[in-house]
Amino acid sequence: MTETAPNPPPPVPPARLRPFQRMPPAVFPTIMGLFGLGLALRRAADGGLIHPGFGEILLGAVSLLWIFAAFGYLVKVAQRPGVVMQELAALPGRTGLAAGSLGLLLLAATVLPHRPGLALILMLAGLVLHLVLALLVTLWLQRAPDEAKSVTPAWHLHFVGFIIAGLVAAPLGLTGLATGLVIGTGAVAAGIWGVSLYQLVQGRPPAPLRPLLAIHLAPASLLGLVAALAGLVSVAQVMALIGGAILLALLLAGRWITAAGFSALWGAFTFPLAAYASLLLLLGGGWVWPGLAVLAGALLLVPYVAVKVLRAWAGGGLAAKTNAATA
Image (tube, rainbow, N blue to C red; front, top):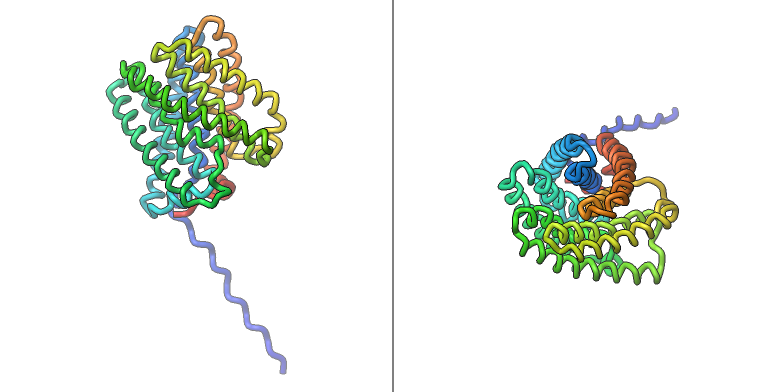
């Protein structure tokens, strides 16, 4: 008599995730880039170069997108607050959370022409939120292993991103705050630039992380924008030149930077390019034509990256590819 093997138990279907339980913060850099593109189009419209409706429609749509994504992430945190510190352990999580909080400052800049009072409230709330995040990142860095403590271009998002508040502060007449942001964050940005340049001389970053090098363009663009709005035109022109040098270096190294192929980290290309277009257009005069050329490049690049990242988010693949934590 032969024994028959017991029937294997029926497969257990995987537990279904709750809504937003694995909401990927990696979507926020791309949303940040869309904000930047809308603000650049508004800047072009202010100069009479395009119809103002283009920028306002985009900014309205992106504002709703950011509100939806921010709501989703708040739902995730409400399910398990400790997920935030777990998210910081992954580079896409750290950059995504920083871009997410900076989105509140960009929302303030978006509503500024229409609701100045609301823009002021959003700016103050954004500064507080980003300060909390910067403190959490600092706390995580203190506890992280040595290999994770090295300076990366993403540090600009964490510690220089406060400069975006100047886009609201200066037009509202808070020139002291805007100037202080230029001085304080400018010093931090210079330190990060210096360390990053030294690291590049010492060794090349791995191919998947090279797109983050594009973030170096963002501080020059934003420092120049806020300086120009605060009346520091000479500082703004110097930042425009520095930004031009960074952009030229990025273009010359484009094949090397993109060697690993498309990933969510390509979101790092979007906002810096759009912000640099805004700076050149704001300076006017001989800067306008280069500004239009950069804006044309942003109009090609930003939607391309946005469609791919947002499609991955909608399909559920973005969370897995960026190692998003689960609440």
